[in-house]
Image (cartoon, rainbow, N blue to C red; front, side):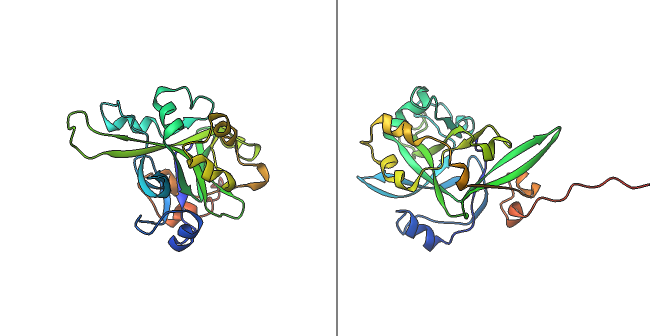
Length: 232
């Protein structure tokens, strides 16, 4: 799965040059993006790609409450075309979710060590995302809640020793096709694979990231050394 990620190493100007975000969408450095947060995305609007802020955690149009989104932060690539909550967005509501790294936790007994996983030299990339819109059924004139989920797949060997799954990081050459509403499903499925091993870098980081409320640079500090027992 992917439950936390970063957008911390690139300036807004560099991100606008890399992705078709436009000038109106707000861009902020994030060291610990968590479910329920607004996330920087690229969506198709009136036939052209543009930047948008979407709430992380997909809320299907038929949901009774937006709280369901906290259970829908990830969509499995293997079943994304079949699950009722995801098959519509997979065909008609794809998006790019902009990031430069993600976190996974390795279990060692009762301990959990966080790792920060990046692409190559730490350059920004796009998760394969799905999006939709929800309106409170009790308020038909209320504001739309626009939300998203990150597609995941089986982890590559670099990540598998930490966690069995990882988010789909799109090849930059595939990003335009992923957004294109006319791309055939077979082609879409072909994009949903793990990042190649040689492009994947993982390092242990501080347990400051364990607190989803903390969004500071300490999250990316090197892992603290394990305490040593006393010598007698």
